[in-house]
Image (cartoon, rainbow, N blue to C red; front, side):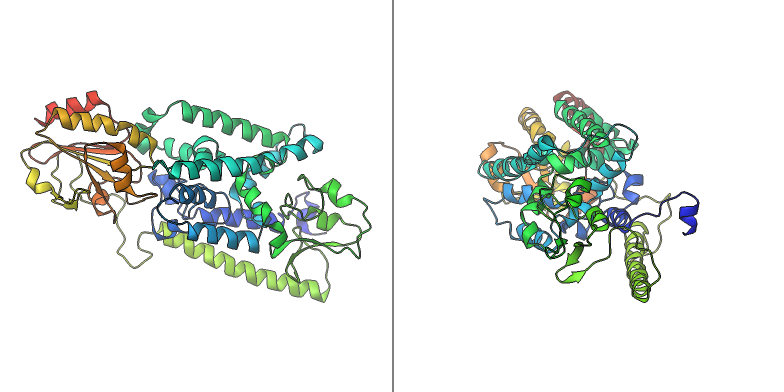
Length: 482
């Protein structure tokens, strides 16, 4: 008996360590929590396997479920080859092993279930409820986004109305940061509903093992449909099996047989099978048990040595990621003192440097040509509901004040054909698309939308802040600019 067991402590299982590792690797941009902003670098275009919100300040990759919804919503304009391909790759290689080993929200659910309280056992009701996630997959992830694709108004329905990971990792993490105080004024009934739903789901996880995973997660449903094709998963040796039913009793999920679409490969059945008929395998290769092996045979010592080497390489990758995303001079640049802010001229009272951007009408908007006029720049996106909601206020302002220059600049993150959307909207504003993000950076704006910048007639910044604006605020800023 080792020292940990003598002290009454349990060594973390291999699976728990992998879950923690995946959660940290997906969210390696830890400085995002300090800055109150989300990472928008090159790796954000890549999907991670598990459910992890794109808008989490620390996230360095995209959520496959959110990417799928946006891709389907934009399918009328361009095919979703990448997202469908990556999901097929994940599903056919790992299946629902992703849910059990590589999903940060799955880890959160399991930790909540460890809290004291009555635990509800599975049965016929929970098995029937497990079909609900397949209905949510069909309706909220496929049908509604596809319907919205032909209305030129993208609707990632599951992310918008339900996703608890988005509410917890994205919205809550951003809204609690002091730098995003202005965004709290944009909250409405939809956010309140999602917050209540998040609380109910988290509470349910205390009493029901992985309640969200079992009943509501469309990503788990999607991977479950590919379980039979997956390379990695729980396999049963029928020659050894005596049909004693131990595996079904000890499994906390709503499985009907070993390794079916509800199995998340947690490995509990592997260690409890009296005939050793169950194993976690990758093709013909038997993988280590999800629990820690004990023993002193030569083969076990060799396996332990290989495990240490694998963990050493994995930790080196994680350390490299943490340095890359969090140390400013990791890529060879000179370190920037913490007190030194980039000089963009976007601070109130300062003049913006000149810039130019091509409008959707084919003209070029050059800032220097509008000296002597109040200038209103609105950063927005079609997928941002508050942005779309406030565009008519900017149109009304532009119509009431023809002496002001008003330009709506779309984010470089495009989920559909922006010119087509603008034409269908009937809005008469001047629009442009900031495809390379240079204008957004020049204005000192982060990733939070909408964002408005107002300049006076001398080109000095009067207002530069994220969050929705009202018609009254625009009028007050116009009077100040004049």
